[in-house]
Image 1 (spheres, rainbow, N blue to C red):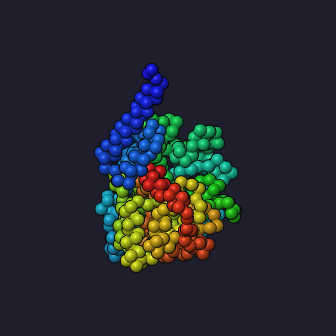
Image 2 (cartoon, one colour):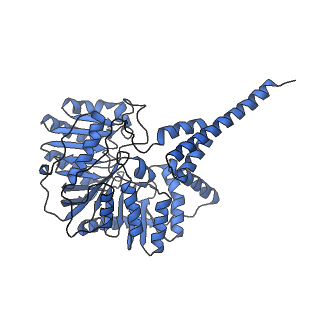
Image 3 (cartoon, helix red, strand yellow):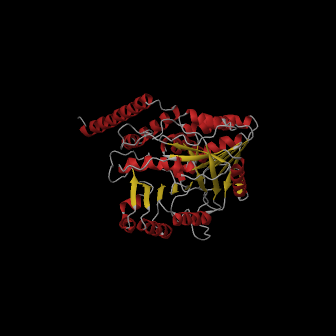
Length: 467
């Protein structure tokens, strides 16, 4: 007697298998057409095999890393070449970035490193209070807490005074505020303007969830900018000492480089609002007579090339003395791993400083296998123990990089980021001393693990290009 239930189950199983095979095949074909790296292809193939339908949906939502011609009409960022350094200045990295069609390093800048979260908060408030013409803010996270309420109150006051105030928040990072924007109403009524970057409510189908604006900048009168790793919430800044506030890196730049930050903000704002802002002009700035040489490097889907990633990779291969990496999330690709190992073989001192435990479980699991491989090569792995370390900085010989980018594929290839390259000795010394201060409260070495733990870590290492 024919058992139709058995036949139906058998047919269903084979149908699912066939569909899964074709989904994986179609994904691989698509990745090949986009010239994806082998590690990326393997990661996504595993995801789709393990989760055939959900995996394919996630791939469609997250696989794109450059904006197409019609994606929200986002123009490519193109920075003006203003007050570039020429005579007496020679840097292979600076020239390499110029060849990637990004503006060169500028002179007549000043650089100030904020001491801690209290200093950062005080400087933000002071700068906002001093604004005479304009305040432009871009942030990944804008919280809804007492700290941000104080900032919003001050922004509202400035808007009432007739000062142009614009607040750009990432829709994903500030999702709760986009869903419940009540606390922004007073700011809007006062004449302030706000916008959510790639809104998940207004354009749910047009946006890619993985293309997030991670740039952080507070631009005052086009004269000064506060930037770094901090978001605007009580996790990052505080008016008083608070052990729950994360350790981060923030800085203030005054001078010509501020115009490049303004131009990046202008491109981002215009893409979301269709509201045209004035092009930056040299006359807008009264640059300080200082020796800080700074190059502003944007990165992300709105930049034609991968100058940030490639210049870091190039600098690692050029390094002669030291490589110090400070990052909350360490998920490098094969090229970066090779560059670090080869540098160590050449006798370069390498330190990698991470939080003992970050706020992302998957990032911590994924990093472990990479760190174990590096530790086997006698590369120094250090963990910041007091609290969460959210700072992003690289010190490679006589070059310092500070800004918003983490040391992972998401920052290098997907997020909208901005980093400042510091070439002046005095600024590099400041960053060096700040890092040394962090090292005093850090422990060395990643602990041994059992076979099961190692297996899990390697599994997530394999999946890391898709995370």
